[in-house]
Length: 294
Image 1 (cartoon, rainbow, N blue to C red):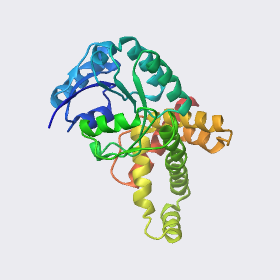
Image 2 (spheres, helix red, strand yellow):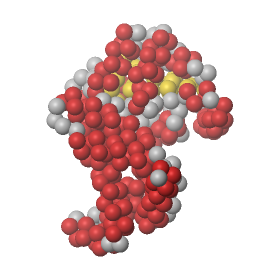
Image 3 (cartoon, rainbow, N blue to C red):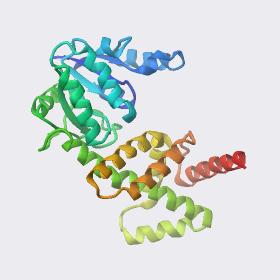
Image 4 (cartoon, rainbow, N blue to C red):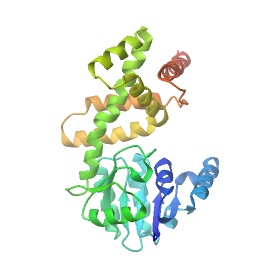
């Protein structure tokens, strides 16, 4: 199969997952390569995946026909501004970051003004284990062209959604109210159940209310995601707050999700096997923080 030229801006978990089986010649830039403490690990991963690392955003972007932006939420606009300065043709710029529609529109303005073709892309599930089968939603004037290019890259589950820039990201942001909110509620429920000594009874009651839900396994998974990705999820949920506030529908529950996701993510914990062990790890780390603060 023909291989296509692609730039990746950001070479974190998602980029590495997508690069694994891609039908593309990939040049990537990650700002963490500017730091000697994190450079070696990124270089090793890139080498293992056959990805060429560029020394700068401009070095990766220049000459690429397809640009995938895969940075943290707070870097979506700054990265785009840097990329825009390096655009030398009319590349498809696929903004795959979890940010609010207004942020996507700001990025689109920068890219379009530089001659690029901006596309709003929403990644609708965890990138592991799905990798290139992860569902993608695309919207905007160049969505159809982007869908073709993404298929050529190797993605197998791409759907164009009606609406302009912000349509795909609105679906992702509003869905996250429930998905990440359920994670936060799960952590609050399970930590309280364990502290009260009634965890097993609470789980049994939940299972009785939702037959087949297997709340112990679900809670174990949700806590795992928060322990590993809580800080990233908190940043995404701040974008969800911005989305909801722009709509004027209220964001009180989601603001609480930001706090709970950040609180667990900040602990920097490994993920021991099993729900009980995870609860103990979180509880122990939080108690240490309280003791230091006392």
